[in-house]
Length: 474
Image (cartoon, rainbow, N blue to C red; front, side):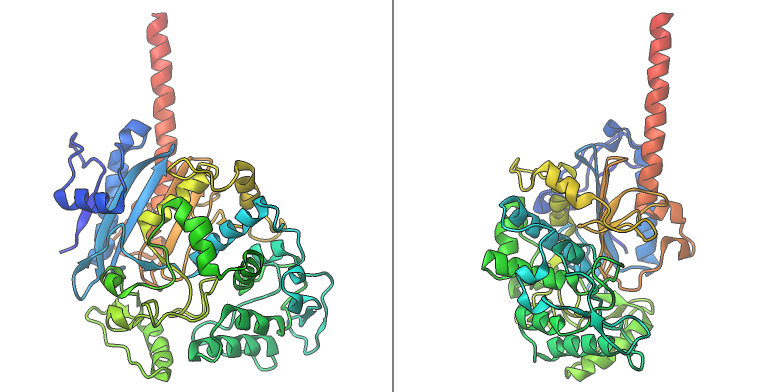
């Protein structure tokens, strides 16, 4: 049986009553929601979305998930479905700990801009101002065996927009192309981290400085290790390790306790299992065998455990975490980055949505700073990106922005609709909504559904306003 907990009105019911389990979960996660109808959003549409999530969990498309929707400054929806651990029957909750992977990046950018507001750095600063090893970068363009001097220095803004020329190592199961010395160098560095021969962020970034860039700085988007370099820049400026900087400058002011680099032993029961498909499981099994481990066969054909057979086997458990504090959150699918919960990520999202104000009224960043972070930094002929994530990827033709991780941990800010979403599961190979069988993709897509609900709400409000004016004239 799949757990289903929600705060929205059920179809054909007027009561706002919540189950004792839901009330306890919301209380523990410190999340309270209002009636969506009071904010002009159809509770029936949210109910359809919830039913779709329940179906996805029952069918084994995903193990479980949780979500929060914020509209006009208020939480109008919270939901929890399925399991964090299918085999044990552990419910997936708002405070379930999930691997954030690349969603780690947005916290790095936020920490950096707290330093900017103090006059300690600027996005326009040269990287070699803080890391001299990057003073004379060289570039090896695709198809060339020679390197050439970079046409311009790497700037901090290039790191935050992934236009530094740095990239990632080849993906799981891929091998560097013959003659691709850059990809081979990235692979060696990443393997060094996994095997323990590279055990500090400083040493890893020093290694990156020796690798030729894939392109000239500022010219083209290349997703890669740029945020790991940014994390090291932050360490140099602040004079502290990146974990301490994040705690002091971001997490503590936001009241965040669950976003961390490793899960303590007494909280391992809260860590979700990381699942994937059979193909991914086979490829990761090889990597685990290299470290003297093996992965168990699944109890369900669509859900293969990837990060250890037990929570205490996870590479995000205290004592077993990645030794390099990866600012980019990705040293492979099983290593690097933060863990966090839907409930705590919602605090971060609400701060961005409110222009830098935390839930307690503390100003973390100036509104003008948030505006700078949100601006597109990519040339018109490429997909838009800002300093916090990607723009227009959550809904067709949208202007919203947000970020996600390999395990499918997503958040987004939509200023046009005034809708902000946090949606987490832990499944690397979760299919696109359009690929789902027996589930209406329009109902499963929370972002698309909320856009439709907002438009519908505006039309109803406009119609009611006209009717009221006509009645007064009569």
